[in-house]
Length: 261
Image (cartoon, rainbow, N blue to C red; front, side, top):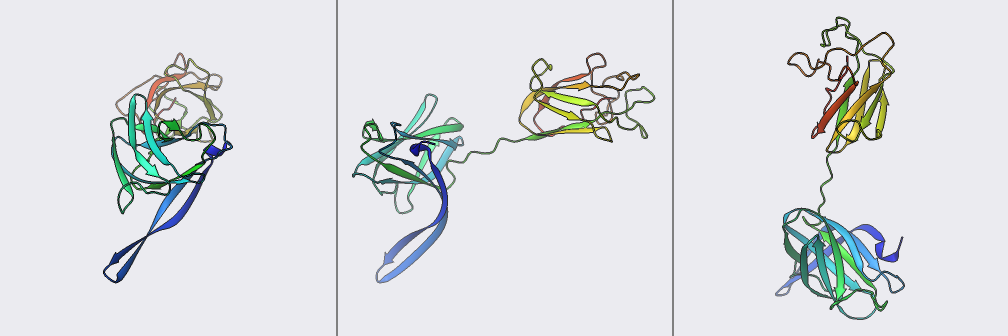
């Protein structure tokens, strides 16, 4: 990995000393820090780091350390057409006042690119400087994890052929269930499961999307039962009797009621 992209996670204590008359008060606060570095030997012309900011107002702390010669560094954030240009940082200088904080407001939610400049030139453009940057995270640079969902249910014998799973109608083992990452099973399947002894199958850690399920290997002598019977979606059969598919499944929460009889 290039020198500018190395990322080191550490946890250190930041100590602030406040002197009031002849009394010194020491305040120690533990914060998580992330350090990014660029070196004079690096061929890359700038230190650019992908970060996440939620929309709205965010507070963060940052400290720039120049390992080569004194200089002023400037932080720029950008995503698409929106650019936020912060003030200059002297080497070893903290942004803001005693609590080293700066507040920025964004209108676009998502991943931002942080870039550091010296004057109007990118850091390290001519290989003249080496810079390290530490992020002291408060509520800024927070990138929420993308939610994931589970999808599944079962394949079962509909012995009375009414399209409803009644008590005593058991699962079918060995049916292949393919998950396609498109609404109509047109693309190559992304994942595949085989139903267990009880006829159950489960796909986990899926992200928000519209997917399609294709069922293969229906036991010989059996046909797919009626689709969408009754008002209780937890006991009906969801698959199309002709295509053996369940199409247009919109994943926005766990869905454990997609079954086939």
